[in-house]
Structures are given as structure tokens and as C-alpha cells.
Image 1: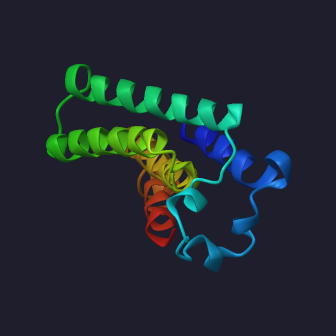
Image 2: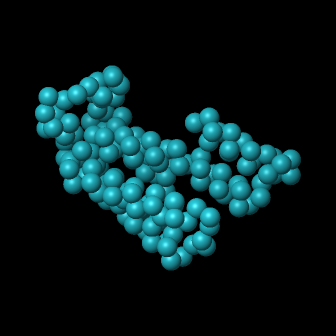
Length: 146
């Protein structure tokens, strides 16, 4: 899921319609705008709506499964809070039409979650130490560095 959503975010930011110009000058992304309307300058494209729809769906399903389907771990409340806050931020940035920031945040969030998902899978499969080709350790170091 994270690979697909990160890929869609990258497509919107870099490929579709030649990409967005403020990505080529990262300092301009943080320059204050003269008005709120200048912040909201991404066109209303179907791909942006699709990304937001998919993100909201993923976070609703994840929160639902976290509460009713998955085994409760020590970090249950922290992860539930994470899912609810992430869903609220996605919906709020869409509702306020702050998709310029929302797409970047979702791209960064999804691309970093790919390594975390690999780490979880390797840990659940007990691929640690020499017997597991140090897969858990490699994923942990990769996650720590990135």
C-alpha cells in the first residue's frame, strides 16, 4: 500500500503535467505567501483527488482494523492516536485545500513507511541474526538512517 501511494504522490509531484515548479527550488516551498490563496495553487486534478481518496480509505481501514481486528500490543494507544491524527490531517488538508503541503507530507510519510513495513515483516518472520541473513538488523539500520 505504501509503495503504491508513495508512487502516486511522486507521480503527482514530479511527473504529471511536468511536475510542480516549487519542487525544483525547495527554499521557495517555505517562503511565506502573500495570501492564503497563493498556498492553495495546485490545480484540481483527478490524480490529487484520487490520492486523497485512497489515503483516507487506507487510514480509515487501518484505524478500524487496529481497534477490532489486530492483536493489542504495548503501543496500542499510541498507534491508534497516530491513525486518527493522520486521518484528521489528511481530511483537514483536503477540506482547507492545502493539498500542496498535504501531498508532500503524504509522500514523505508513505515512502518512509515502506522500510518500517519491511522491518515488521522481517521481525514477524524472525529473520534475525546469521540464520536470517541479518534482515531485521539491515532493515533497522536502513530505517534509522533514512
